[in-house]
Amino acid sequence: MTDQLEDGYDVVVIGGGAAGLSGALMLARMRRSVVVIDAGQPRNAPAEGVHGLLARDGTPPGELLELGRAEVRGYGGHVVNGQVITVARDAEGFAVCLGDRSVRARRLLVTTGLVDELPDIEGLREHWGRDVIHCPYCHGWEVRDQAIGVLGTGPMGVHQALLFRQLSADVTYFSHTMPLTAEQSEELNARGIPVVYGEVTALEIVDERLAGVRLSDGTVVPREVAVVGSRMVARANFLEALGLQPTEHPAGVGDYIPTDATGRTDVAGIWAAGNVTDLTAQVGAAAAAGAAAAAQINADLVAEETAKAVAGLRASFSAATEARLCEEVMGDRRHGI
Image (cartoon, rainbow, N blue to C red; front, side, top):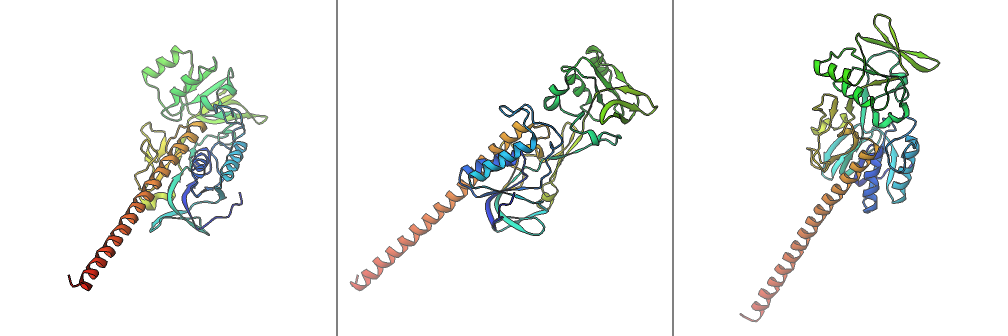
């Protein structure tokens, strides 16, 4: 990504994932000047492929992004490497600071995604995105019929176990630090999901593959796949100076930037799309949200430009009318009227 960064754009897109590139593509096709600032930290980088995306199922994440960048550039959009440090409002809209350089924007589309905060369990981070997963819709088919262990690390643990039971008859739930309610215990029992009580301290790794789940008493329960719910936190610290801060998600699974149905945030001129505002959105949903938000941004810019054009027309008409009246008055005086 070597596009030259210009001084100003109609829209600066902060974040170069599916939502950001899709939004930039929509804007570029509407002949808007647009740049995508990409920090190069995609959430799905550890995954072998993007799944559930029509006509692109299984495409490696890096390959999908490269295709998206090429499409944005094909319509005149820019894509540059950079890390946004701060954003401030100015007379032109926004000043976006990248540390050693800055760029101005009339509007912002924030698509920075989220960070998965994982429990402090030995071996978990190293295998994240491979044989340690979180989403049945993203990775479930690839682990079908395997021995799956679901770790109760968050409020959605039992829900995850019930979903993965659709994919394998061999699912075990580890209560870890999340006590079960009577209703949850009944649900797991009804679906034939055994429960292992006790704190999980490590994953057992053999030949670089997950072999089991180790408890605090030393017991190892053989498993081929571990499912864990991360705490999902929106990447949005750079927006704090504008008064836009992440909010606790109602489901208790992390923090997100709230928006309305169009992607508009509480701060005028800023839209958000993708995982930064929808923590559970897959690639397809994130891309669709980016395109939809971009359409709203373009409509907002058109409305602003039209209002200015109307004001200019009225001012011109008023000036012409005043000049004509003045000329008539002067003419009357010359004729002694």
